[in-house]
Length: 464
Ligand SMILES: Nc1nc2c(ncn2[C@@H]2O[C@H](COP(=O)(O)OP(=O)(O)OP(=O)(O)O)[C@@H](O)[C@H]2O)c(=O)[nH]1
Ligand SMILES: [Mg+2]
Image 1 (spheres, rainbow, N blue to C red):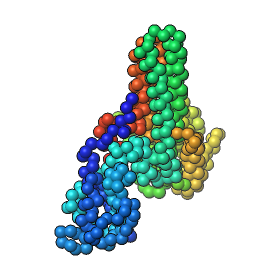
Image 2: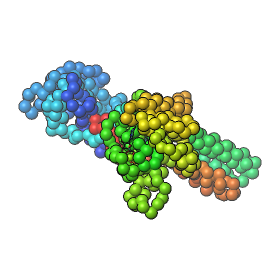
Image 3: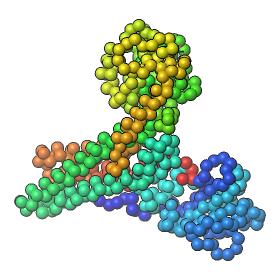
Image 4: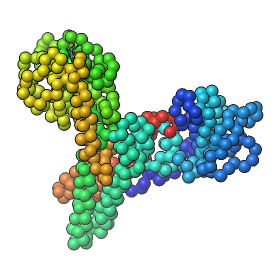
Protein backbone atom coordinates (compact mmCIF):
# COMPACT_ATOMS: atom_id res chain seq x y z
CA UNK A 1 0.00 0.00 0.00
CA UNK A 2 1.58 3.29 -1.07
CA UNK A 3 1.66 6.20 1.31
CA UNK A 4 -0.06 8.87 -0.72
CA UNK A 5 0.81 11.58 1.77
CA UNK A 6 4.45 11.26 0.70
CA UNK A 7 3.83 11.96 -2.98
CA UNK A 8 5.48 15.16 -4.24
CA UNK A 9 3.14 18.11 -4.40
CA UNK A 10 2.04 19.48 -7.79
CA UNK A 11 4.01 22.46 -9.19
CA UNK A 12 1.11 24.90 -8.75
CA UNK A 13 1.44 24.58 -4.99
CA UNK A 14 4.73 26.44 -5.01
CA UNK A 15 3.48 29.70 -6.60
CA UNK A 16 4.38 32.58 -4.24
CA UNK A 17 1.59 33.59 -1.88
CA UNK A 18 1.29 36.18 0.88
CA UNK A 19 -1.25 37.01 3.56
CA UNK A 20 -1.69 38.66 6.92
CA UNK A 21 -1.19 35.91 9.50
CA UNK A 22 -1.98 37.92 12.64
CA UNK A 23 -5.50 38.98 13.56
CA UNK A 24 -7.51 41.62 11.75
CA UNK A 25 -7.77 45.06 13.29
CA UNK A 26 -5.14 47.44 14.63
CA UNK A 27 -2.46 45.92 16.87
CA UNK A 28 1.06 46.77 17.99
CA UNK A 29 2.58 44.36 15.48
CA UNK A 30 1.23 42.54 12.44
CA UNK A 31 2.77 39.46 10.88
CA UNK A 32 2.66 38.97 7.13
CA UNK A 33 3.68 35.60 5.83
CA UNK A 34 5.05 34.66 2.39
CA UNK A 35 5.63 31.21 0.94
CA UNK A 36 6.51 29.66 -2.40
CA UNK A 37 9.32 29.53 -4.89
CA UNK A 38 11.19 32.77 -5.34
CA UNK A 39 9.85 34.55 -2.25
CA UNK A 40 13.34 35.18 -0.83
CA UNK A 41 14.45 36.99 -4.01
CA UNK A 42 11.10 38.76 -4.21
CA UNK A 43 11.39 40.09 -0.67
CA UNK A 44 15.07 40.86 -1.17
CA UNK A 45 14.03 43.58 -3.65
CA UNK A 46 12.32 45.50 -0.80
CA UNK A 47 15.30 45.33 1.58
CA UNK A 48 18.47 47.46 1.86
CA UNK A 49 21.38 46.40 -0.45
CA UNK A 50 23.54 43.50 0.71
CA UNK A 51 23.15 39.76 1.07
CA UNK A 52 20.14 38.39 2.93
CA UNK A 53 20.90 37.18 6.44
CA UNK A 54 20.91 33.57 7.62
CA UNK A 55 17.55 31.85 7.86
CA UNK A 56 15.63 31.69 11.15
CA UNK A 57 17.10 35.00 12.28
CA UNK A 58 14.79 37.94 12.89
CA UNK A 59 16.49 41.14 11.74
CA UNK A 60 15.36 44.76 11.82
CA UNK A 61 15.30 46.42 8.40
CA UNK A 62 13.60 49.07 6.37
CA UNK A 63 11.04 47.87 3.83
CA UNK A 64 11.04 49.98 0.68
CA UNK A 65 9.11 50.00 -2.54
CA UNK A 66 11.73 49.19 -5.24
CA UNK A 67 9.71 51.08 -7.89
CA UNK A 68 9.83 54.42 -6.06
CA UNK A 69 12.50 53.93 -3.40
CA UNK A 70 10.04 55.15 -0.76
CA UNK A 71 9.97 53.61 2.72
CA UNK A 72 6.94 51.42 3.51
CA UNK A 73 7.74 50.55 7.15
CA UNK A 74 10.47 49.69 9.64
CA UNK A 75 10.02 45.97 10.12
CA UNK A 76 11.59 42.75 11.37
CA UNK A 77 12.09 40.04 8.75
CA UNK A 78 12.93 36.35 9.06
CA UNK A 79 13.62 33.84 6.28
CA UNK A 80 13.02 30.08 6.25
CA UNK A 81 14.46 27.80 3.59
CA UNK A 82 12.37 24.86 2.42
CA UNK A 83 11.92 22.13 3.42
CA UNK A 84 12.82 23.49 6.90
CA UNK A 85 9.77 25.72 7.09
CA UNK A 86 6.12 25.43 8.12
CA UNK A 87 4.94 24.96 4.54
CA UNK A 88 7.98 22.99 3.41
CA UNK A 89 8.71 25.75 0.87
CA UNK A 90 10.97 28.81 0.93
CA UNK A 91 9.11 31.28 3.08
CA UNK A 92 9.48 34.45 5.12
CA UNK A 93 7.72 36.51 7.74
CA UNK A 94 7.50 40.29 7.92
CA UNK A 95 6.72 41.68 11.38
CA UNK A 96 5.58 45.23 10.69
CA UNK A 97 3.60 47.86 12.59
CA UNK A 98 0.06 46.64 13.06
CA UNK A 99 -1.99 49.45 11.52
CA UNK A 100 -4.44 48.90 8.69
CA UNK A 101 -2.70 51.34 6.28
CA UNK A 102 0.74 49.77 6.81
CA UNK A 103 -0.58 46.23 6.45
CA UNK A 104 -2.36 47.13 3.20
CA UNK A 105 0.76 48.89 1.88
CA UNK A 106 3.03 45.92 2.58
CA UNK A 107 0.55 43.44 1.09
CA UNK A 108 -0.05 45.64 -1.99
CA UNK A 109 3.72 45.79 -2.52
CA UNK A 110 4.12 42.02 -2.26
CA UNK A 111 1.20 41.43 -4.66
CA UNK A 112 2.72 43.88 -7.13
CA UNK A 113 6.07 42.05 -6.95
CA UNK A 114 4.51 38.69 -7.83
CA UNK A 115 2.80 37.12 -4.80
CA UNK A 116 -0.87 36.34 -4.97
CA UNK A 117 -3.19 36.56 -1.92
CA UNK A 118 -3.23 33.24 -0.05
CA UNK A 119 -6.51 31.39 0.24
CA UNK A 120 -7.87 30.41 3.68
CA UNK A 121 -5.68 27.66 5.14
CA UNK A 122 -3.38 27.65 2.11
CA UNK A 123 -0.15 27.71 4.15
CA UNK A 124 -1.26 24.64 6.10
CA UNK A 125 -2.60 22.99 2.94
CA UNK A 126 0.86 23.38 1.40
CA UNK A 127 2.44 21.98 4.57
CA UNK A 128 0.16 18.96 4.19
CA UNK A 129 0.86 18.57 0.47
CA UNK A 130 4.62 18.76 1.12
CA UNK A 131 4.37 16.02 3.74
CA UNK A 132 5.14 18.33 6.71
CA UNK A 133 2.03 17.21 8.55
CA UNK A 134 -0.79 14.73 8.05
CA UNK A 135 -4.44 15.61 7.68
CA UNK A 136 -5.29 15.02 11.35
CA UNK A 137 -2.53 17.40 12.47
CA UNK A 138 -3.78 20.03 9.99
CA UNK A 139 -7.29 19.70 11.41
CA UNK A 140 -5.81 19.90 14.92
CA UNK A 141 -4.08 23.18 14.08
CA UNK A 142 -7.37 24.65 12.83
CA UNK A 143 -9.09 23.52 16.02
CA UNK A 144 -6.31 24.94 18.21
CA UNK A 145 -6.97 28.35 16.66
CA UNK A 146 -10.74 27.98 17.00
CA UNK A 147 -10.65 26.63 20.58
CA UNK A 148 -12.78 28.63 23.01
CA UNK A 149 -12.61 26.26 25.97
CA UNK A 150 -9.96 24.21 27.74
CA UNK A 151 -11.70 20.99 26.64
CA UNK A 152 -11.54 22.06 22.98
CA UNK A 153 -7.88 22.93 23.40
CA UNK A 154 -7.16 19.47 24.87
CA UNK A 155 -8.94 17.83 21.92
CA UNK A 156 -7.13 20.05 19.41
CA UNK A 157 -3.71 19.43 21.00
CA UNK A 158 -4.37 15.72 20.84
CA UNK A 159 -4.86 15.94 17.06
CA UNK A 160 -2.17 18.53 16.36
CA UNK A 161 0.44 16.56 18.30
CA UNK A 162 -0.18 13.51 16.13
CA UNK A 163 -1.57 11.07 18.71
CA UNK A 164 -4.44 9.94 16.50
CA UNK A 165 -2.10 9.62 13.51
CA UNK A 166 0.20 7.32 15.51
CA UNK A 167 -2.71 5.08 16.45
CA UNK A 168 -4.01 4.97 12.87
CA UNK A 169 -0.54 4.26 11.47
CA UNK A 170 -0.15 1.38 13.86
CA UNK A 171 -3.51 -0.09 12.79
CA UNK A 172 -2.56 0.26 9.13
CA UNK A 173 0.75 -1.42 9.86
CA UNK A 174 -1.02 -4.38 11.44
CA UNK A 175 -3.38 -4.64 8.45
CA UNK A 176 -0.47 -4.50 6.00
CA UNK A 177 1.12 -7.37 7.95
CA UNK A 178 -2.12 -9.36 7.70
CA UNK A 179 -2.27 -8.68 3.97
CA UNK A 180 1.30 -9.93 3.56
CA UNK A 181 0.29 -13.27 5.14
CA UNK A 182 -2.74 -13.47 2.85
CA UNK A 183 -0.70 -12.68 -0.22
CA UNK A 184 1.82 -15.35 0.71
CA UNK A 185 -1.13 -17.71 0.89
CA UNK A 186 -2.39 -16.57 -2.54
CA UNK A 187 1.07 -16.95 -4.09
CA UNK A 188 1.89 -20.36 -2.51
CA UNK A 189 -1.49 -22.02 -2.12
CA UNK A 190 -0.38 -25.65 -1.82
CA UNK A 191 1.55 -25.57 1.43
CA UNK A 192 -1.19 -27.19 3.54
CA UNK A 193 0.03 -26.67 7.13
CA UNK A 194 1.34 -23.18 6.62
CA UNK A 195 -1.95 -22.19 4.98
CA UNK A 196 -3.76 -22.82 8.23
CA UNK A 197 -1.07 -21.00 10.18
CA UNK A 198 -1.16 -18.03 7.81
CA UNK A 199 -4.92 -17.64 7.97
CA UNK A 200 -4.74 -17.84 11.76
CA UNK A 201 -2.28 -14.93 11.78
CA UNK A 202 -4.47 -12.95 9.38
CA UNK A 203 -7.58 -13.41 11.55
CA UNK A 204 -5.70 -12.55 14.72
CA UNK A 205 -4.46 -9.29 13.23
CA UNK A 206 -7.80 -8.35 11.71
CA UNK A 207 -9.45 -8.98 15.06
CA UNK A 208 -6.90 -6.86 16.93
CA UNK A 209 -7.48 -4.01 14.48
CA UNK A 210 -11.26 -4.30 14.73
CA UNK A 211 -11.12 -4.26 18.54
CA UNK A 212 -8.97 -1.12 18.58
CA UNK A 213 -11.26 0.55 16.02
CA UNK A 214 -14.20 -0.22 18.32
CA UNK A 215 -12.38 1.37 21.25
CA UNK A 216 -11.53 4.46 19.20
CA UNK A 217 -15.07 4.79 17.83
CA UNK A 218 -16.51 4.48 21.35
CA UNK A 219 -14.31 7.38 22.48
CA UNK A 220 -16.10 9.67 20.01
CA UNK A 221 -19.10 10.18 22.29
CA UNK A 222 -16.77 11.90 24.77
CA UNK A 223 -14.33 13.30 22.21
CA UNK A 224 -17.19 15.04 20.43
CA UNK A 225 -18.21 16.78 23.67
CA UNK A 226 -14.62 17.97 24.13
CA UNK A 227 -14.20 19.35 20.63
CA UNK A 228 -17.71 20.51 19.71
CA UNK A 229 -19.29 21.21 23.08
CA UNK A 230 -22.01 19.50 25.09
CA UNK A 231 -25.24 19.31 23.08
CA UNK A 232 -28.02 20.22 25.52
CA UNK A 233 -31.64 19.79 24.38
CA UNK A 234 -34.36 21.79 26.14
CA UNK A 235 -37.36 19.48 26.07
CA UNK A 236 -40.85 19.75 27.50
CA UNK A 237 -44.47 20.66 26.93
CA UNK A 238 -45.36 24.04 25.35
CA UNK A 239 -45.02 26.95 27.79
CA UNK A 240 -42.70 24.99 30.09
CA UNK A 241 -40.21 27.88 29.97
CA UNK A 242 -37.66 26.41 27.52
CA UNK A 243 -37.01 29.57 25.52
CA UNK A 244 -36.82 31.66 28.68
CA UNK A 245 -34.16 29.32 30.07
CA UNK A 246 -32.26 29.40 26.78
CA UNK A 247 -32.19 33.20 26.95
CA UNK A 248 -31.11 33.18 30.61
CA UNK A 249 -28.20 30.83 29.92
CA UNK A 250 -27.15 32.89 26.88
CA UNK A 251 -27.54 36.16 28.75
CA UNK A 252 -29.52 37.73 25.88
CA UNK A 253 -32.97 37.64 24.34
CA UNK A 254 -32.25 35.16 21.56
CA UNK A 255 -35.54 33.22 21.45
CA UNK A 256 -39.03 34.71 21.31
CA UNK A 257 -40.95 34.22 24.57
CA UNK A 258 -44.71 34.71 24.91
CA UNK A 259 -47.45 33.35 27.12
CA UNK A 260 -48.92 31.50 24.11
CA UNK A 261 -48.33 27.76 24.11
CA UNK A 262 -46.56 26.83 20.86
CA UNK A 263 -44.43 29.98 20.47
CA UNK A 264 -41.27 28.14 19.35
CA UNK A 265 -41.75 26.04 16.26
CA UNK A 266 -38.40 25.59 14.55
CA UNK A 267 -35.40 24.77 16.72
CA UNK A 268 -32.65 27.27 17.64
CA UNK A 269 -29.08 26.27 18.35
CA UNK A 270 -26.63 28.57 20.11
CA UNK A 271 -23.20 28.06 21.58
CA UNK A 272 -22.24 29.46 24.94
CA UNK A 273 -19.60 29.02 27.61
CA UNK A 274 -20.68 28.00 31.11
CA UNK A 275 -17.87 28.01 33.70
CA UNK A 276 -15.46 27.86 30.75
CA UNK A 277 -17.12 24.79 29.18
CA UNK A 278 -18.59 24.98 25.70
CA UNK A 279 -22.28 24.11 25.33
CA UNK A 280 -24.49 23.79 22.27
CA UNK A 281 -27.91 24.76 23.58
CA UNK A 282 -30.89 23.68 21.49
CA UNK A 283 -34.27 25.27 22.18
CA UNK A 284 -37.16 23.66 20.40
CA UNK A 285 -40.90 23.34 19.91
CA UNK A 286 -42.90 22.22 22.94
CA UNK A 287 -44.14 18.65 22.72
CA UNK A 288 -47.87 18.02 22.49
CA UNK A 289 -49.67 14.81 21.74
CA UNK A 290 -50.52 14.41 18.06
CA UNK A 291 -53.89 15.94 17.49
CA UNK A 292 -55.76 17.19 14.46
CA UNK A 293 -55.67 20.75 15.77
CA UNK A 294 -51.83 20.98 15.54
CA UNK A 295 -50.86 22.81 12.40
CA UNK A 296 -48.34 21.09 10.10
CA UNK A 297 -45.53 23.55 10.90
CA UNK A 298 -45.72 22.86 14.62
CA UNK A 299 -45.94 19.11 13.92
CA UNK A 300 -42.67 19.31 11.95
CA UNK A 301 -41.09 21.26 14.82
CA UNK A 302 -42.13 18.58 17.29
CA UNK A 303 -40.69 15.88 15.04
CA UNK A 304 -37.37 17.79 14.89
CA UNK A 305 -37.40 18.24 18.67
CA UNK A 306 -37.73 14.49 19.22
CA UNK A 307 -34.89 13.75 16.79
CA UNK A 308 -32.57 16.36 18.33
CA UNK A 309 -33.29 15.23 21.89
CA UNK A 310 -32.40 11.66 20.97
CA UNK A 311 -29.06 12.89 19.55
CA UNK A 312 -28.24 15.20 22.47
CA UNK A 313 -25.54 14.58 25.06
CA UNK A 314 -27.85 15.86 27.78
CA UNK A 315 -31.63 16.37 27.74
CA UNK A 316 -33.17 18.86 30.14
CA UNK A 317 -36.78 17.82 30.77
CA UNK A 318 -38.60 20.99 31.79
CA UNK A 319 -41.92 21.18 33.61
CA UNK A 320 -43.52 24.26 35.23
CA UNK A 321 -43.53 23.94 39.02
CA UNK A 322 -46.94 25.62 39.29
CA UNK A 323 -48.65 22.74 37.48
CA UNK A 324 -50.99 20.57 39.58
CA UNK A 325 -50.27 17.54 37.42
CA UNK A 326 -47.18 15.50 38.32
CA UNK A 327 -45.11 15.45 35.07
CA UNK A 328 -43.08 12.39 36.15
CA UNK A 329 -45.09 9.77 34.17
CA UNK A 330 -44.88 11.93 31.05
CA UNK A 331 -41.12 12.35 31.47
CA UNK A 332 -40.72 8.60 32.08
CA UNK A 333 -42.46 7.93 28.80
CA UNK A 334 -40.28 10.50 26.96
CA UNK A 335 -37.17 8.91 28.46
CA UNK A 336 -38.27 5.49 27.25
CA UNK A 337 -38.87 6.91 23.77
CA UNK A 338 -35.73 9.07 23.43
CA UNK A 339 -33.22 6.98 25.38
CA UNK A 340 -31.19 10.10 26.32
CA UNK A 341 -27.51 9.60 27.08
CA UNK A 342 -28.00 11.77 30.17
CA UNK A 343 -30.86 13.87 31.48
CA UNK A 344 -31.91 16.26 34.24
CA UNK A 345 -35.43 17.05 35.46
CA UNK A 346 -35.93 20.81 35.79
CA UNK A 347 -38.89 22.39 37.58
CA UNK A 348 -39.28 25.88 36.07
CA UNK A 349 -41.05 29.00 37.34
CA UNK A 350 -40.15 28.19 40.95
CA UNK A 351 -40.95 31.80 41.87
CA UNK A 352 -44.63 30.87 41.46
CA UNK A 353 -44.54 27.65 43.47
CA UNK A 354 -42.03 24.99 44.58
CA UNK A 355 -42.59 21.60 42.94
CA UNK A 356 -44.62 19.27 45.10
CA UNK A 357 -43.89 16.15 43.08
CA UNK A 358 -41.66 13.29 44.20
CA UNK A 359 -38.32 12.57 42.54
CA UNK A 360 -35.11 14.50 41.94
CA UNK A 361 -35.91 17.96 40.56
CA UNK A 362 -33.64 20.91 40.06
CA UNK A 363 -36.00 23.78 40.62
CA UNK A 364 -35.22 27.18 39.17
CA UNK A 365 -36.78 30.47 38.22
CA UNK A 366 -35.55 32.59 35.36
CA UNK A 367 -37.53 35.44 36.88
CA UNK A 368 -35.81 35.44 40.31
CA UNK A 369 -32.58 33.72 39.19
CA UNK A 370 -33.00 31.02 41.85
CA UNK A 371 -31.45 27.68 40.87
CA UNK A 372 -29.63 29.00 37.79
CA UNK A 373 -26.20 28.70 39.40
CA UNK A 374 -26.95 25.12 40.42
CA UNK A 375 -27.95 24.37 36.82
CA UNK A 376 -24.77 25.98 35.43
CA UNK A 377 -22.71 23.85 37.81
CA UNK A 378 -24.60 20.70 36.79
CA UNK A 379 -23.96 21.50 33.11
CA UNK A 380 -20.25 22.07 33.70
CA UNK A 381 -20.08 18.82 35.71
CA UNK A 382 -21.70 16.96 32.86
CA UNK A 383 -19.05 18.22 30.41
CA UNK A 384 -16.34 17.15 32.87
CA UNK A 385 -17.88 13.71 33.25
CA UNK A 386 -17.74 13.11 29.51
CA UNK A 387 -14.32 14.63 28.96
CA UNK A 388 -12.90 13.02 32.12
CA UNK A 389 -13.78 9.65 30.56
CA UNK A 390 -11.16 10.22 27.86
CA UNK A 391 -7.91 8.47 28.58
CA UNK A 392 -5.24 11.03 27.68
CA UNK A 393 -2.66 8.25 27.36
CA UNK A 394 -4.56 6.69 24.48
CA UNK A 395 -5.72 8.06 21.14
CA UNK A 396 -9.33 9.21 20.98
CA UNK A 397 -11.65 10.53 18.27
CA UNK A 398 -13.04 14.06 18.19
CA UNK A 399 -14.20 14.60 14.62
CA UNK A 400 -17.17 13.33 12.62
CA UNK A 401 -14.90 12.82 9.60
CA UNK A 402 -12.60 10.49 11.51
CA UNK A 403 -15.52 8.67 13.08
CA UNK A 404 -17.14 8.05 9.67
CA UNK A 405 -13.85 6.67 8.27
CA UNK A 406 -13.45 4.38 11.29
CA UNK A 407 -16.96 3.08 10.72
CA UNK A 408 -16.09 2.35 7.07
CA UNK A 409 -12.98 0.45 8.18
CA UNK A 410 -15.02 -1.43 10.77
CA UNK A 411 -17.66 -2.39 8.18
CA UNK A 412 -14.94 -3.73 5.85
CA UNK A 413 -13.48 -5.87 8.67
CA UNK A 414 -16.93 -7.18 9.53
CA UNK A 415 -17.35 -8.20 5.88
CA UNK A 416 -13.91 -9.82 6.06
CA UNK A 417 -14.97 -12.02 8.98
CA UNK A 418 -18.29 -12.89 7.31
CA UNK A 419 -16.50 -13.86 4.08
CA UNK A 420 -13.91 -15.86 6.03
CA UNK A 421 -16.63 -17.75 7.92
CA UNK A 422 -18.33 -18.52 4.60
CA UNK A 423 -15.05 -19.98 3.26
CA UNK A 424 -14.45 -17.24 0.66
CA UNK A 425 -11.35 -17.13 -1.53
CA UNK A 426 -8.27 -15.39 -0.17
CA UNK A 427 -8.59 -12.77 -2.91
CA UNK A 428 -11.92 -11.59 -1.48
CA UNK A 429 -10.51 -11.59 2.05
CA UNK A 430 -7.56 -9.51 0.84
CA UNK A 431 -9.96 -7.11 -0.88
CA UNK A 432 -11.83 -6.42 2.36
CA UNK A 433 -8.61 -5.87 4.30
CA UNK A 434 -7.52 -3.42 1.62
CA UNK A 435 -10.85 -1.61 1.92
CA UNK A 436 -10.32 -1.31 5.68
CA UNK A 437 -6.79 0.00 5.15
CA UNK A 438 -8.04 2.54 2.57
CA UNK A 439 -10.60 3.89 5.02
CA UNK A 440 -7.84 4.34 7.61
CA UNK A 441 -5.54 6.07 5.08
CA UNK A 442 -8.30 8.59 4.41
CA UNK A 443 -8.05 9.75 8.03
CA UNK A 444 -4.39 10.71 7.87
CA UNK A 445 -3.34 10.82 4.25
CA UNK A 446 -4.19 12.49 1.05
CA UNK A 447 -7.77 11.62 0.32
CA UNK A 448 -7.36 11.81 -3.45
CA UNK A 449 -10.42 13.98 -3.41
CA UNK A 450 -9.90 17.72 -3.81
CA UNK A 451 -13.42 18.40 -2.52
CA UNK A 452 -12.57 16.92 0.86
CA UNK A 453 -9.36 18.97 1.06
CA UNK A 454 -11.24 22.11 -0.05
CA UNK A 455 -13.79 21.55 2.70
CA UNK A 456 -11.19 20.98 5.40
CA UNK A 457 -8.92 23.88 4.50
CA UNK A 458 -11.62 26.41 3.68
CA UNK A 459 -12.55 26.39 7.36
CA UNK A 460 -9.14 27.86 8.21
CA UNK A 461 -8.57 31.56 8.46
CA UNK A 462 -6.52 33.35 5.82
CA UNK A 463 -2.85 33.41 6.76
CA UNK A 464 -2.82 29.98 8.46
N1 LIG B 1 -43.17 33.43 36.61
C1 LIG B 1 -42.34 32.92 35.70
N2 LIG B 1 -42.75 32.83 34.42
C2 LIG B 1 -41.90 32.29 33.52
C3 LIG B 1 -40.63 31.81 33.89
N3 LIG B 1 -40.04 31.29 32.79
C4 LIG B 1 -40.91 31.47 31.77
N4 LIG B 1 -42.03 32.07 32.21
C5 LIG B 1 -43.20 32.42 31.39
O1 LIG B 1 -43.77 31.28 30.82
C6 LIG B 1 -44.30 31.58 29.52
C7 LIG B 1 -43.74 30.61 28.50
O2 LIG B 1 -42.35 30.78 28.41
P1 LIG B 1 -41.50 30.29 27.17
O3 LIG B 1 -40.07 30.44 27.53
O4 LIG B 1 -41.97 30.93 25.93
O5 LIG B 1 -41.90 28.76 27.15
P2 LIG B 1 -41.53 27.66 26.06
O6 LIG B 1 -41.34 26.37 26.79
O7 LIG B 1 -40.42 28.12 25.23
O8 LIG B 1 -42.87 27.59 25.22
P3 LIG B 1 -43.10 27.09 23.71
O9 LIG B 1 -42.10 27.79 22.84
O10 LIG B 1 -44.49 27.53 23.43
O11 LIG B 1 -42.95 25.63 23.69
C8 LIG B 1 -43.92 33.03 29.23
O12 LIG B 1 -45.02 33.84 29.53
C9 LIG B 1 -42.79 33.30 30.21
O13 LIG B 1 -42.68 34.66 30.60
C10 LIG B 1 -40.24 31.94 35.26
O14 LIG B 1 -39.15 31.52 35.69
N5 LIG B 1 -41.13 32.48 36.12
MG1 LIG C 1 -40.25 28.43 23.23
